[in-house]
Image (cartoon, rainbow, N blue to C red; front, side, top):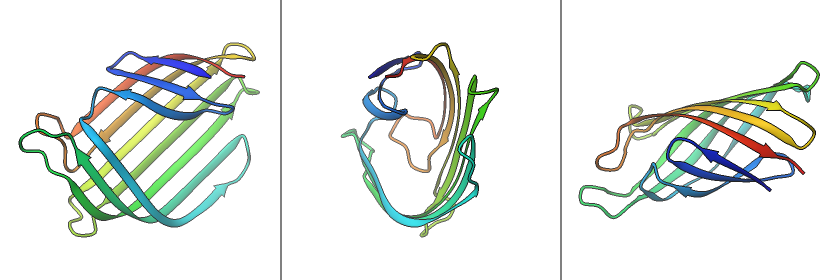
Length: 162
């Protein structure tokens, strides 16, 4: 189990054999529920384990239930999702760089879109400890009252693998 303290308004717990994340508390976005369900295709154009890169296209159903504030409303829409992901393990496993970006325009109105990219840098300190830095940029088409459409986040953490 890995605990990571994000310095910008978020506490995040990472449960892993190999780095899968579970949100525990998110103080940034007053979204009660956001679910995306869909199907698509993925092409792995660099299949090497240490240098894997993929691109995918999917049709998704997006449902967002925003917190109960005056002016907020729930949304349901069909989106196209285009995602690019790469993971590079460098310098004989001394550095791990990953990048994920996606663009999700609504089919009803292509201007209503979600755009996000995230870069992650992991530096193993020993067999069981790692240093983790993440930069995330998000632009959302519909946000809760009082929130900005564009959000950036820089986080640092220390992790434990077992």
